[in-house]
Length: 373
Ligand code: ATP
Ligand code: MG
Ligand code: MG
Image (cartoon, rainbow, N blue to C red; front, side):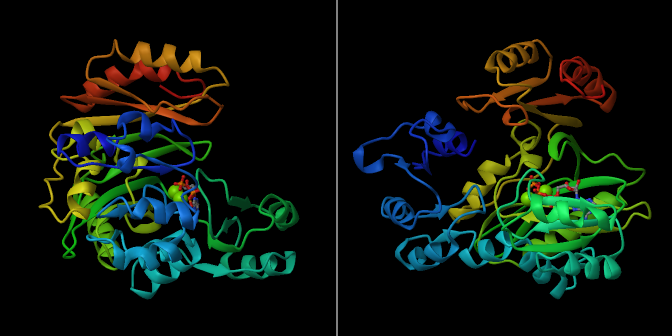
């Protein structure tokens, strides 16, 4: 998705990823042997250096990268590494991310560090109550790395499920909605937020995003944008950031976590906003003027196409059906194999009103096993 606006801006883009035909590499072909994509792990120092030698600016689409190597190579790049390796390092460890945010007066649920012992979980539950959210500090995604302990009898199974990972605990947040805001930060520290959206998760995976956020008045959405902007102002380096938040019944907001990169909750911006999150990310890291983050349609939704099974045929059938829905745009990521729960693509639906949006979305949701149209 970054490759498309890069092509429109006549900007060469080179990817480092394991597969020779991984999704991004299918979009842009190497211009010459010198500009060829790099095959390897994004945590491999030698591969990161190989990529760095070919480019003026280096960025990430995942936070689970080698921040130490990025820091070392930063001075050798004409336009540096964005966001700053120090930002990636703080964010990739959820515990240090929470400490960073709390230390700057931003609203986060109470949390404590724990050891991987039943005693330590007991102790945390005395401080934070039950249910207790145990989280892996690092390498988490799609809720893998989280364990909800509802009674202390579950402490040992939590330790088995999260074994060999550094852990911390968060107080359970009884949210009424999950909200997200994309924020873009320029090289000189200007921040611009996109509209607040509602994110709906199914089995810990983002299922739907609704833009803009539906609420009684504009106050909650404005509050969410302010919190998100304040959070991103505390980090260094340029680029787009996804800010996940919880909305409580009294209208207050807690930050959940920050992604230092384009984010699933911002995919709707491709069709629904004046500048997509991907284009604004490129503009930010290249030191170009940022684009407008305003919605250009009254109502939009994004539906993730998540693998129903091992069959890629199901995905093809679904996306072919989506082509019949007015206002719908299908994105397929070109992943070789489908697996139950794997993100295979998404559909964005735009409409002139919320009523029309729901009318357009309903037939799509009816085709998704286990969803509630
Ligand atoms: P992602 O795929 O967004 O990176 P992740 O694996 O990093 O997910 P989190 O975002 O930390 O995981 O948590 C996943 C989901 O679990 C959240 O979207 C929310 O629904 C729920 N959750 C997380 N923390 C809490 C909490 N403290 N209280 C209640 N629910 C929570
Ligand atoms: Mg996460
Ligand atoms: Mg999350």
